[in-house]
Length: 190
Image (cartoon, rainbow, N blue to C red; front, side):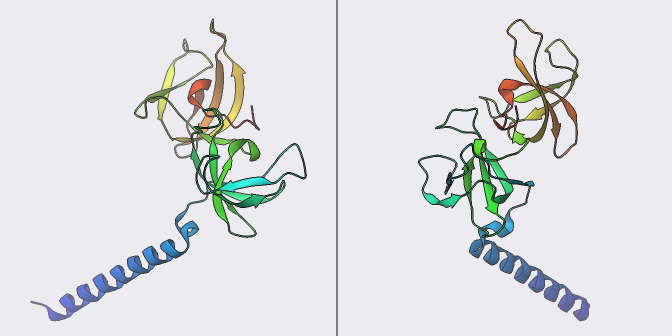
C-alpha cells in the first residue's frame, strides 16, 4: 500500500469536503450567492412615484420585504407562474444591484423579454414550430419551466386567431414559434 498516495487522497477529500461545507455555509448565510443571474434590467411603472413591492414569495399574499422604485436596476434570478394575479402575470425573483436585496416582484413591473414556458400539465412537451400555426412543421419542443427570450408576438392565421410567440431558448438557443397560451408573456413586451 502506498502511504503517500493514501495520505494525498485523504487530504484531497478533506479539502473538497471543507470547500463544499464552506460553500453550503456561505449560501445559507447569503442566499443570493447560490443564484445564477439570468439577465439584468430595470423596474418600470406608469407612475414614476410608485413603490414596487418586493415579496418573500411569488404571491401578493407573501410578506413584504420592502420596495423598489421605477428605474432601479435588478438582476433576474428566477421565474414563477402567477397564481393570485392570473396565470398570465409571471413573478420574477430579483436581486437589487445597489442594495443586494433579494425577493419576488410581479412581472408587469419588470422590463424584460425573458420568460418561461407553462402548461396545465407540468410534464407537457410544448411544440416548437417553424411558423405561427399548428399547420407548420414541428422543429422541436420545450418543457414547462424552460426559459425563453421573446422575439416576436403575432396573431396566428388559425380559425380561433390564437396568439403565437416567437421564442429563443436560453439554453439551447433554438428558435421557433410556440402557441401563446404556453408562454407567460411579459406584459411589458407583447
